[in-house]
Image 1 (cartoon, rainbow, N blue to C red):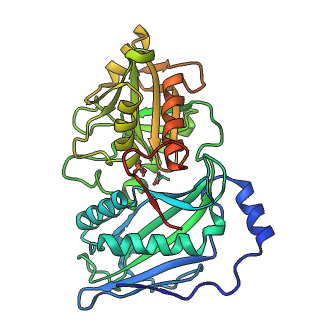
Image 2: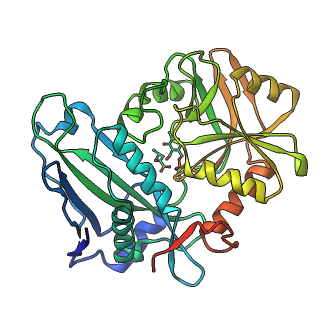
Image 3: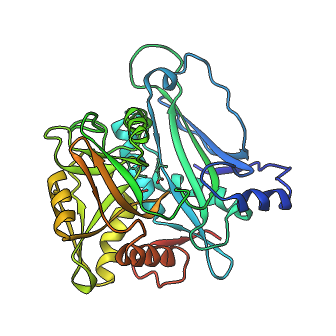
Length: 361
Ligand code: PLP
Ligand code: COI
């Protein structure tokens, strides 16, 4: 499968594009082009087409509108010091996309085909990649079930789309985010879709997000569905807890039990943390461990990590069982060091010892 190029003949004027990039934020403006490919049970994948960004037309009886058979990915392209552009671990996104597809009974896209579509869009719209460290082009591949009909069954047609948006910070402030630990709602149970990146997981989370906002919190923290004790992850990010301080610190992240999204940033931090000399651990941590660890001072920092959010400090935690605070509202030293090392690798400023960056142009 190839990517056929029929790019936008009238890309946005350079001054207007620069103004949009300068506005920053997350997901406000989209680049000049997008990529579309279609699949059917009979013919398999078509070639992909890179074409002007714009609306798509679908029959109201299209499966995705009714039964939510949809998956997506999130990845970024980063400006490099020599003016080139790199992707960060795109194969990991391609593999996770294929796993999500399998779970949602959608067709698995060949890894190279997925990566080629991303490379072609980034090459074509490279003028949209912001230049500063901490800024990037956020890339959103997704796939929807496109069979028309209301029968509940795996769709025999699917559409893959790829869009991109210039991004700066996901959170409007660099201050620590406050979190609402939900004991009423659950994100995922064993055997469910927690490990997959599917729209339904996020739709089901929004009521708790509303509750978090009503409690004055920025984000929801999810607990395990069975015992409602083990800390899993946040709305769109994995979590890390720092025990101890300085060179003796250990950074801990909840173990992948089958209900958490296996974050690529989470995985990268396991290695970056080690590179920086910290002990790293994947473990099970309860809400009581969190509260008591903060009270005793053993937990010195907490941060959330993900492609969109990068590394963001977590401060106050609130739940039906009380409220407690980690840090002083600013990112702690280990959070800041890990964030910096990760961004420096992604932007080609620190040596990419793990071979994570894939040059596009
Ligand atoms: N957990 C959830 C629920 C997410 O949506 C995301 C974002 O993609 C993550 C974790 C972090 O994953 P990654 O680091 O691959 O972006
Ligand atoms: C990402 O970090 O790529 C995400 O998908 C998180 C969120 C925007 C859903």
